[in-house]
Amino acid sequence: MNLEDDGRIRTGTVWTATAHAVTAVIGSGVLAVPWSVAQMGWIFGPISLFGFAVITYITARLLCDCYRTPDPIKGQRNPSYMDAVKATLGKREVFICAFAQYTLLWGTMVGYAITAATSMLSIKRTNCYHKQGSNADCRHSGSTFLLIFGAIHVILSQIPSLEKVTFLSVIAATMSIGYSFIALYLCVAKFSSRPQLRGTLTGVKTGVNGLTMTSKLWQSFQALGNIAFSYTYAQLLIEIEDTLKCPPAESKTMKRATLCSIALTTGFYVSLGCMGYLAFGNDAPGNVLTAFHEPFWLVDLANVGVVIHLTAAFQVFAQPIFATVENRLALKWPSATFIHNTYTIQVPGIKAISYKFTLCRLLLRPFIVIVTVLTAITFPFFNAVLGLLGSVAFWPLTVYLPVKMYRTQTHIKKWEFKWLMLQLLSFIALLVSLVSAVGSVADIAHHLRHTTLFSANL
Image: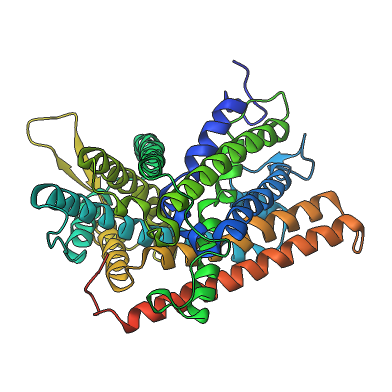
């Protein structure tokens, strides 16, 4: 193996990059795709799925050229998204990037807690219906399951760093692909049992179940945010590109991987979204797995996969937040024993295994987990939270920063045709983010008026 120009050995290829990208994109957001299609109908639902795919692909190609700066082939490497922003843009954009990234990280933790608790509750309900019949009263509160999920992560939060959770990433990727395909199979099976065209051209109808035109509009906007969240990818692209061997040029390989991964992801999203809409019509649930109770063992298997995936993924998203907070505190108080003194506990009977910790880690990390879980209990709204996360991440991370970095690096002159097209793309993405954020916040406000505080009805 040949050393790269920075002394590292990289062995990544277009196929490994494609695999990383697919597993990074396909996650719990896929479970909301049928609901999102149902809000917009047969016309705008598929158009939105393809539209977000096209935008994500265009901006991802621009971002591929920002891995090296100032030259995309021979320039300095930027191993992370933040490094690329720092190398190309100013302090304001670095702040926007940091705010969007850490908001997305923490918000995703909240969303994962809600989704994992929903799947735990779904397992209990499925087994209840299987044993007592479909007419049984199997309603349960989700607060208990959120607290169980939180207790698990109070313990897991003591894992020292992100390097120590690589195995969790592998587990998460395997589980996400598994339950996604089970969800698709269940939708196909349900449609095959009663094959008829369900749904409408414009989605859910006003007047049905008390749905007003305003509520339909908010839910349609929220659906855009859900789809945007499902395609969230940009913040991981640079890190994936940093694994690729050279030659060929990393940007060239990554562009091919981006095309393959987005094509595969879009094909899967359209398949699940349309089959889910065919199976349920305008009654498509917010989380498609919660609508199935038989075959109970397969539904349980899928929900167990969701719980395992999100238990692993929660730590993958939490560790950068833990590290950032601890590093900031260490810099601010360089001599504080609470932050810097390391204590060691030897595992009884096993000399080779010991646990090292600081009091800061021991107390601060569980505190962050507790705040996250309490937020999830207060706002246990799966689709609304996903929509809000998608709106927060889509414009700044997926469109605005890649477009601005590319314009700066390639020295595109103002008012040129290419400059105008990129500005138009950024403006459209901003509008989408704003309306999806408004729709999601409106839905959260609506749910809060009809929900007992700290009583998670999942």
